[in-house]
Picture (cartoon, helix red, strand yellow):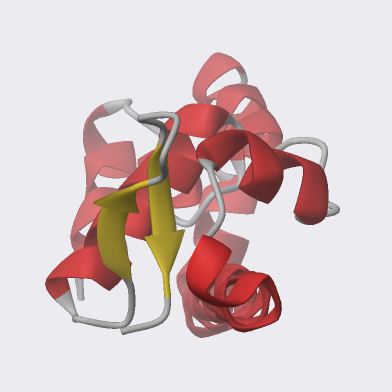
Length: 126
């Protein structure tokens, strides 16, 4: 629903906001600069929004899965943000997005947070 509302911003000249929301930053910039490819791309996207949302959800689920596998493999020693950045194969993934996903997983009680003997923040399975 949010993607459709953001798509509607294209009617007043802010094209591509739905693409930013669904993690398509490069095409979102193109849509913004070219007014949604002069409106044609914006109209096509009206029908593509379900697929954009599905891809974004799949990508988020993939990151969650990778972090859970990292937590399981690290055991009680846990893992740090740096460990997660090295373990996740997506080079476009920034530490800010990784931290927000870890925070979401902490709130959902999928991960626990603690400190190791050196005082570093670690994350592990509950």
